[in-house]
Length: 67
Image 1 (cartoon, one colour):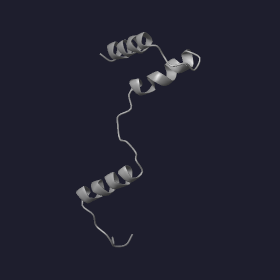
Image 2 (cartoon, one colour):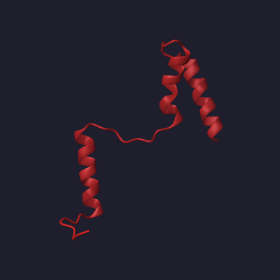
Image 3 (cartoon, helix red, strand yellow):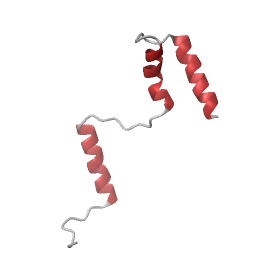
Image 4 (cartoon, helix red, strand yellow):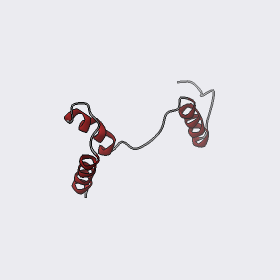
């Protein structure tokens, strides 16, 4: 391995990464069970949007399980 042509500070790399993400309009966020809730409830409900009570109950179940 030869000598590195370019040397970047961590802060510079982070700014470049954020520039790429924002240019591509990608959102950075944590993926949790709640991220998949709408998908699974639609599958159970025959493709129809889940009802508010089923969403609430499902969220309560997920949160109580994680505690």
